[in-house]
Image (cartoon, rainbow, N blue to C red):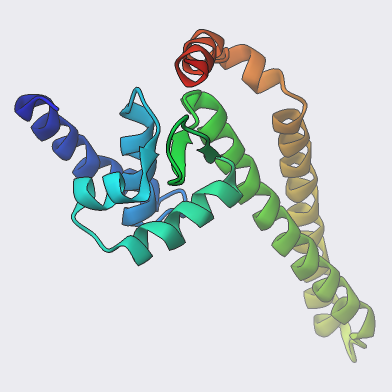
Amino acid sequence: MNEKLEKTQDIFLEKISHICSEFGLNNIMAQLYAILYFSNNPLSLDDMCERLKISKGSVSVNIRMLERYGVVRRVWVKGSRRDYYAGEKDISKVIIDRLKSMAQRRISEIDNMLKAVYDEIDSVDPQNGEEKEDARAFKERVDALKNLHHKAQTLVKLFNSGLLNNFLGTGSKIKQKEEVLLSE
């Protein structure tokens, strides 16, 4: 690889690590995905180890996680017995899928929290007027949170409907080029 291009990629790898940590990816996962994203050809575990100067075990563990996320896939390379990997080239799909996953996890956590709170509210037995007012105000605020939660669920359903994918467009040209490269 051209030395200046490699240096440019190194700068990108450093910056993207921080951004990806916000999406729940560790630095190694972010860097592995980035080098696969920018690579025109599938890379072996050894290629990735050499590029990032990290152990094969670390690459292997993190590649499996990226496979589970659906952003990396194992590919066959004619004439080689090694495992090779290619990164998903449709970056909007990667970001949207990760955002959906994070949102769904948070929605589920909020579902559980609201259920627990409503169960507890039902067991409260206020003794006087002030306690009744406090209980009513508390329930009113929890109801407002439940309403906001319902709106968030609707937004997640919109994400899942594919409308956002259509709005952002897909990397179909990149995908077609990648399929041609892999079939050669």
